[in-house]
Image 1 (cartoon, rainbow, N blue to C red):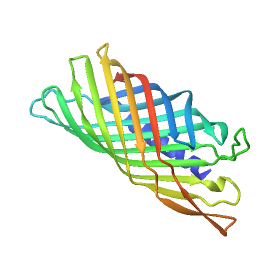
Image 2: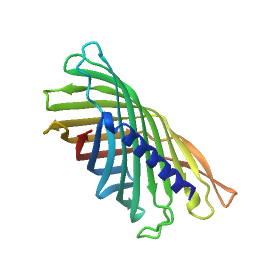
Image 3: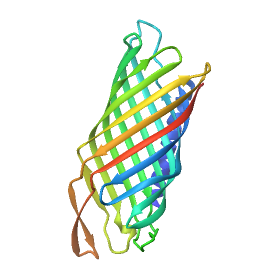
Image 4: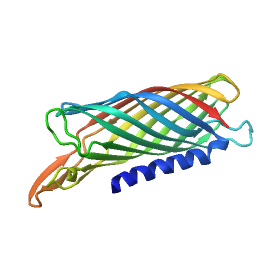
Length: 253
């Protein structure tokens, strides 16, 4: 129950920011394909797609005396995924993503650098796979630096491209969902990602966009857990990759 409350809190925060900034930015809705893989261990695939809502401010000022720009992206995501590993399993998936950037306008190009936070929640506690394996909840948190730029090709088309450098990551495996086990936390220190979006404005306030995102995270450190309060075991988070591709619509208020 506490973890569910934490999930809802993060979603409410995301919705608060999206609503708060809507008057000066775009409100976004999109659907996406999602694929997560831990090679030789397991994979998750969206079933059929993930659904996201958010807010963003990517437009820059036309004032030549206002070259410095402060921009942002927020997004909440909900969906279902098919697990394949120790058997198969359908489960709920949640995500929050927030990024802020500082940029400096150079004609039709604005280089950006900022800070990003990515939160994922895999809700499979209490579920049982096709082979009888017991599921447990997992929470992933990542702090990273986005570096890239926004290219205004013309008045209707813009491209946003960025490289994400992982600063710190933490994986919490709620093994206590399975009787006798303790929870385990693992730190992830190395990883990177890319994020590419092309946006086409087809009316004064409405635009369509498509995107591709990829993450590559290295193996975590090793942490100790316990079973039955006595038996000690070691656990780590395997190296993993995530790929997302989707389409959406944005409306400026």
